[in-house]
Length: 82
Image (cartoon, rainbow, N blue to C red; front, side):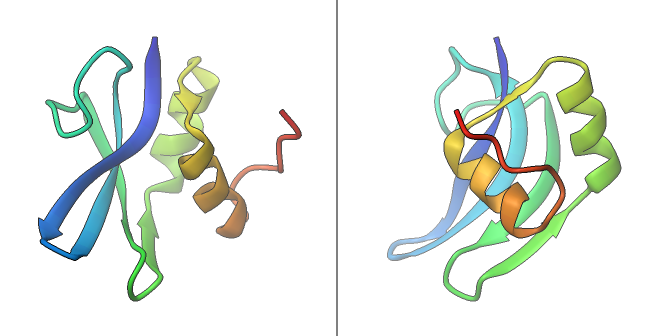
């Protein structure tokens, strides 16, 4: 199954994340199929390619809970009650 999830990078105690599309069986920091955005929890900075994310969600990719929360805060997708 293909998922939209976070890939961690950055220094120790200073995480930054890329929002990526990858196979759910891959490691967290493994090879991504496509990079779709960026999230920095320290500065609360988010950069998202909205068109690519909506395209991938329509194609059947599942967003993880954390990515779903980021997308909800950015008002890209409606809140999901699952």
